[in-house]
Image 1 (cartoon, rainbow, N blue to C red):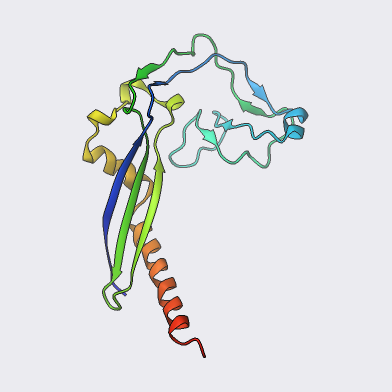
Image 2 (image 1 turned 135 degrees about the vertical axis):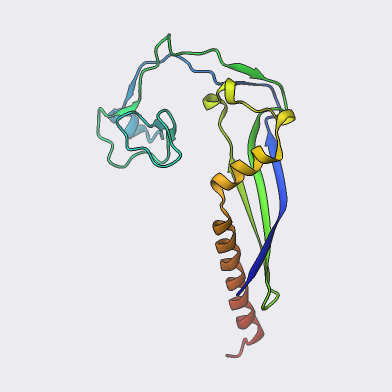
Length: 181
């Protein structure tokens, strides 16, 4: 089966209002307590220097889901001192990009079956933005967008997902075409 696919859609979502990005608020360290567990509160955990970091993650990134091996008294997030706190920077309305929406359509050259795969790629949340690295919507380039799409959605992912969807459609076609069997 030879699948030929193309990107058929690429949208960029932006915040409708102005955003204060990169703001880091001073706060004490937070530890897991029985009260937090009993409340069912899903406290976002952040990676610390003691954690083994998965590829693409860094200290301070939010861990999802909460670690299953977390013990009472375990560090949920480290202290942020007044010296580490920042005021952040203001990004005008419609300039802070939040998501990339991509769509790929593929066709099986042998059978003509086609499928479409869509994905919504999250970009850096405002509280993790760094002013020196920030790119606003009005400054974005095709290369910048493509670099983010490839980071989260590789060509192999696209080909595999479209292939799976086409296989599902072929199986449905057989069932629908021969309901008496």
